[in-house]
Image (cartoon, rainbow, N blue to C red; front, top):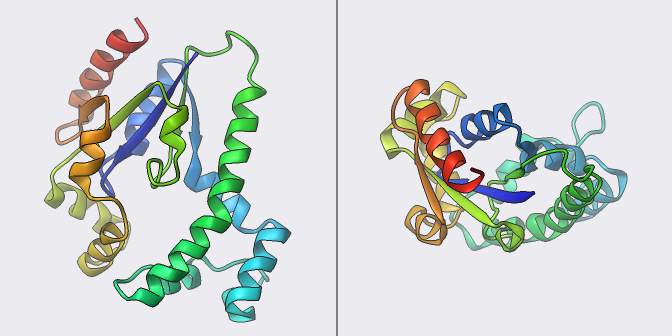
Length: 199
């Protein structure tokens, strides 16, 4: 069983690629979704409240993702420091959960597992991957996709600036999948990768 990591710019289509890989039999681990669950584990929530106060909680006493985003995304040294704190708090817990779930998969149950994580390289998770896919799409295409999520261009730029530069991600990848075209085009790209790596 091969472990595949997905990297790319914001709104490049990593989720679409992971869904295409899942249709071919891969088991997908979405670090964002796992992170949302980890965010509200009592120990994690207590650490965030100790750092940022009760205002970080919503009316249901759950951690407000919007409130966290306000503190960690931005170009100031303060935001960078808060982002480092958040990553150091969350990443080890997310990684532990993913690796634990991978280890629990029955032998031979899947030809591949996929880890879809926004900060996969930064968090050191690429070290457990035998293949690293860079999902490629032009900035303007990605921006338009982000706007459908309700993001402004300023929010898009702010969040992208908080990540590793696009070209560095591309340089570290072992494979590139072009997601600038149609869904049919993407299926062709994923097929090409699957035949090359899985056989």
